[in-house]
Length: 110
Figure 1: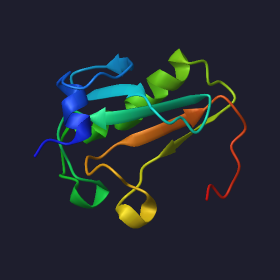
Figure 2: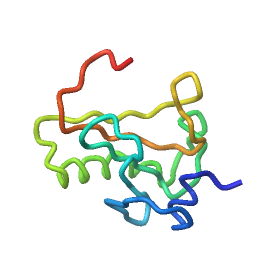
Figure 3: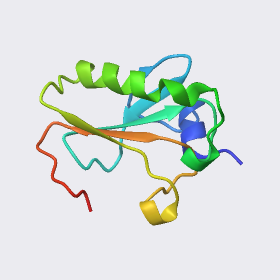
């Protein structure tokens, strides 16, 4: 069964896509937690960090985050979050990272 993110990648569900390449698609979060809140998703459907293969599209998430942060002018800092499992807040079983920035972010996050 295709996840919500797989459907966004296939353009079956609309999203405001801000970056994509052959490995990842990145789009604005529909419930942003910061002025800049981008979700970065590998095209390869992987359920989460616990299921990572040795190679694949997921390796491009960090490079995409750096590029997107530059694109959005996040020169004073940003946060990259990857949740694993329901207890951590992962609501879509497709590996993804949240890029948050545009304001001072507190710690601990919650």
